[in-house]
Image (cartoon, rainbow over all chains, first blue to last red; front, side, top):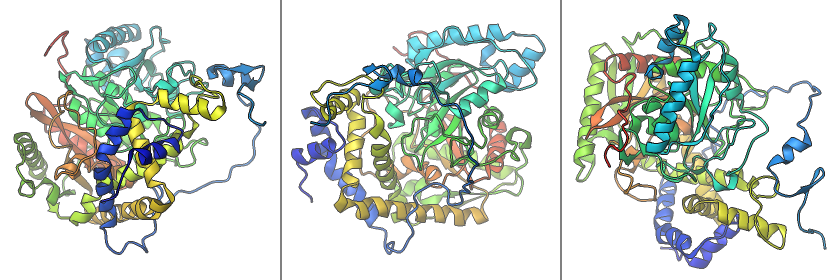
Length: 98
Length: 489
């Protein structure tokens, strides 16, 4: 059995820029052994190292390269309508470069 | 109410001037308000929809619902998440544009498990969706609001999306039809992505033919979705003839054999017995139905493969939810802290759990062992199905382990038990992009249950035909949940 800790769970969440409350951390931690046990079922299938991983639902996509065609793009004003902070046509954020 | 008819019947009634589009829209809005009050099925009710003229198109003037993870220009589209609680898109999903061109009229946006990442209908940011057959029970998810609304007769169809079974299980629990066609038949452009390699668009209706009508209208090659394909030579509705004699179906024997369960519940026994009785209806009409045993280790891995792939893909797809360029801005001294605050406050606990699982699977030390091996097992499962589809016209299985569970006992946590494969087997349809349809096949404890038919890719007509025939042999087509104010409370 692996040793899953509160710190590990917090770290896994923070890697995705998500914070957990103590209750949320406990919920995940309490079932992490079961999660891991379930994942182990995948490793129980024998002789799969040579199987080509299936990354999509269909294997027979036909991709067609289209000719370039000039199209109107969406107005910047429309694109910004769901942004809480912007100035003119630019999104406002705290200074990034020191 | 007239709105409770099927699309086919409503079209005829509109043409015969037995009802007007305005009357249908008003009935649908009025019923929406009742279903909102009783079942909490909607995020938005569109109070003043544009009335359209009736023409030769079967969908002209027909009201419908849209799952709230489809982008609709100018109309709130939240994915049932607080991270997008005020989000108003600047474009409309391709399949909705296609429906609009046919003259269908959107009445509301339906609630779902947050971004489709749940199977109970209990994690919507607007609250729990209740089953119109009995409000103490869940609808399943994630297309919970769509299923509740169609079952209650708000309109003849609503859009759903299906990554694991999110159309087909709510359809079973609500006593209606749920159909996801072959992957890529309907463009995913404008569907908020959950796990792109598994996500399918589809619909919920109260008849198989209505499902064919709706998907005929939604489908088509789309330059905005490179995985969509040209299906212009496929006419689902016009191809249904109900002829099934000589067809061969299989079911997965080791999942539906009660002897393989320790202490099967009374509901499970009834559900399986009802399944076998339904098979007899097909056998009487010349369909061969055989039980096939599949390697237990492969079957047992199905739920884990799904969890592994869907959680991992979701962590990537949801990385654009930062609150910086859209969504409520988080607090913080710098951009990283602002994003952390937005995501911490915005996501519900259950979706965070899935993200943590995805994060764990994608750690360098786990990637090959879990993520890549899950993709390998996915191929083995799909290859096995494709091998069987060479002999058989389709797979027929009971949906879930019985009717809808009680809301105060939702199973939305991970577990290891002997019914988990029966509960989750519809995920096979997503692994292979197979066309798959659920239809109602009875009641247990006064709650509906369903049966599912899945076929090989591009063989949608065959799947619909078998479902249509079976539907005609049972009394559940077009049934409406007898929703009354304050029933069961």
